[in-house]
Image 1 (spheres, rainbow, N blue to C red):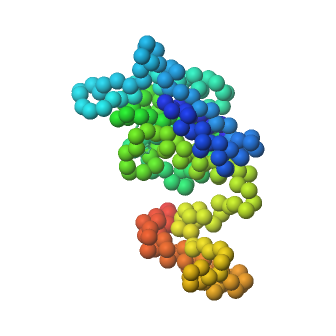
Image 2: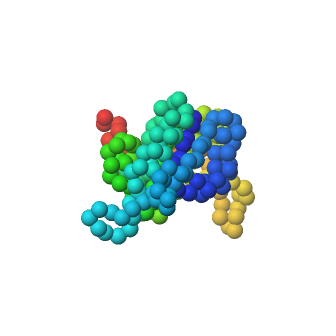
Image 3: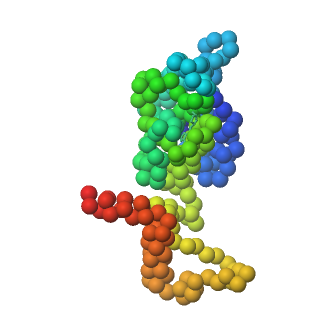
Amino acid sequence: MRIDVLTLFPEAFENIFASSIIQRAQQKHLLEIVLTNIRDFARDNYRSVDDKPYGGGPGMVMMCQPIFDGLEYVEAAAPTKGRRILLTPQGEPFNQSLACELAGEQRLILIAGHYEGFDERIRMGLQPLEVSIGDYVLSGGEIPAMVVVDAVTRLLPGALGDEESTEEESFSSGLLEYPQYTRPQNFRGLEVPEVLLSGHHERIQEWRTQQAKERTRLRRPDLLAEQSIDKQE
Ligand code: 4FV
């Protein structure tokens, strides 16, 4: 998979992309990440990428030209047609099922913004998939882009080592994950549940399923509602 990121702060990605699963996926040639600076496509002497909003109001808006030119340059840099993704609080909620969908793509092109947001004609002209990582406002689209890259990369076949698995984790079954324990058996008086020490795999699996349902019912009843809706469909 190739992931292009159009951003004003390519340096912000270096550490994240040089660590753990994302770095290993690149070393295994499962993933190629290309960072492109939107400001490299600014045309005026001040290398402007933002300007005042028409109609007045606070803050600045990302201009069309540097983003259009940047995207067209990046798209021409490799034959595979990429899925254009705009990170914005106005986008569809990012979740595990969207991560799975995107992990099936050959190429993603992520556009990370700043300031008050994007000139509307960027949406109209580029028709990107708009994605939000949550109902809050960040100072930039860089962290949302990192979230998408991380969630997608670990779903790429071969990205996770054997000891790691996406099978039983939260949301893979539509439920929150069951409680996990490791050594020591007793920590400051807190014991590991007997069933997990029993070696009785069926009873352990029953307990884990029951715990996952209970935890989801208590913490995220919306997920259970979603599940029943999915079942009806
Ligand atoms: C955001 C989000 C987000 C808004 C203006 C960056 C900021 C500036 N992106 N999910 N939440 N973006 O807050 O994706 O462009």
